[in-house]
Structure formats: C-alpha cells, structure tokens
View 1 (cartoon, rainbow, N blue to C red):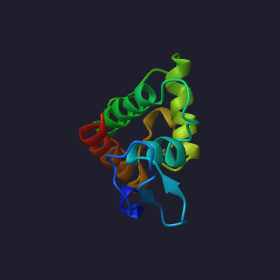
View 2 (cartoon, rainbow, N blue to C red; view 1 turned 60 degrees about the vertical axis):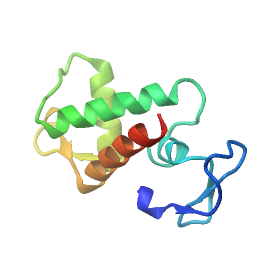
View 3 (cartoon, rainbow, N blue to C red; view 1 turned 30 degrees about the vertical axis):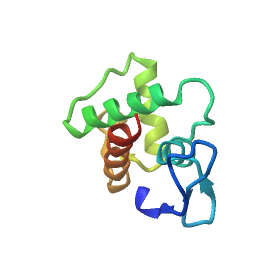
Length: 117
C-alpha cells in the first residue's frame, strides 16, 4: 500500500501534502493515507489509537491467537476486516487468517508507527 505513494514534497512541512497516491490523490502523511484510504477512518476521534489497535489485532491473528465469540468488539473487527479483504476464513470467522493484503497492511502500519509516531 505504501509503495503506491510518491514523495513529491517536503514531509517536514506540516501544512503540505507531500505524498501522491497512484490515483493522483494528495496525502499529508503516510499515516493519513493508511488510516483514511485503507483502514476506512475519517481522521477525527482517535485514529492513531485505532490504527495501533488494528496492528495488535492483525499481529495476534498472524500468530494464530483466536479471539472470543462473546466479545462484540472482536467480532466486529473480524467481520469488517474479512469484508475488506484483509482477512479470510474457512469454516468459522473466528478462525480468520491474514490475506496477502492483510499482511501488507500489517507491515505498512508497523512502518508508519516506527517512522511517524
């Protein structure tokens, strides 16, 4: 995902939009690009905290750590990320695993956390 961004300006200038994606849309940061374009956030509230939550959830799933059907936050995440193509499952949504797209998102979130947060 991040590989679709081109640096065209100075990322140190907080008022600029130094990144352009493959569709010609300008982005203020890699973090905004992932949060808005790929995770589906609007930018208000606590997008950094939610992105860190996504990273933790994807990490757990990549390690085979299954959640609890009784936990509606867990189930909402599973349904949403399966629908978005970041996860897939066979017999049960509880046994979801990361798709190639999900692995790429996890890698990119880790990069953004390391570089921008």
